[in-house]
Image 1 (cartoon, rainbow, N blue to C red):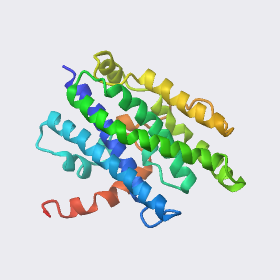
Image 2 (cartoon, rainbow, N blue to C red):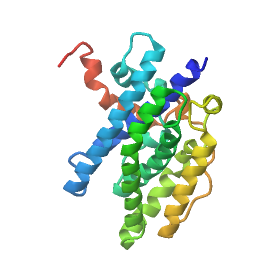
Image 3 (spheres, rainbow, N blue to C red):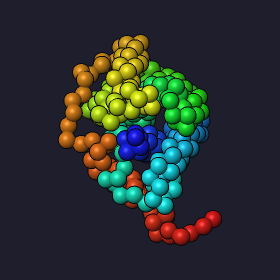
Image 4 (cartoon, rainbow, N blue to C red):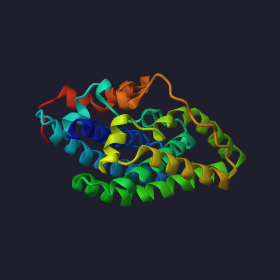
Length: 252
């Protein structure tokens, strides 16, 4: 009975991981240090792997002949349900790490709760992903601390990155009515609990290096959950989807 609500929820999880993974992989050849390039690629590949698991489940429920690859590479922009935050450009390293931290804190809170989902498939995927995302969160939090509490230049960049991204965090602290219904059924993570955990994680970290916590972001006319994206997603998809769309029947 929850099938119609579960599909967009799985797409939210899968699309968000996929797009954030794609953004991180854009750092290949451009990272500030070799170690960071390897770390960014590893996190990105973790997220792509997690995206496949969520999209495979969504494809099974859709049962329209599409598989995870088709969902990833052959949907138009309006069909994606990823968070607006993850589609934003990488910017400099401070922007990338602030964005990663905001996403990781949300992602970790969601997966913690999904690991106890009454849906065994969801619980299994979440438990496996949680091991990776625990590392992701630790790493991005440490970078926010280093940059926010480091040199005058690194702090300046972090202080510029936070407000540039903050309005998109509105989607991290509030979910849709269908997500609330799934949570009440024991299937999904409770959006209110996730939002509270996210805010606690962010405010605690910011306090350690005296970074100002902006006031709560307000809803605006765009919504990743409804397929209403910023202009950046279309450009990202044009690059990400080029080969699968140009050669739809190609095999390796």
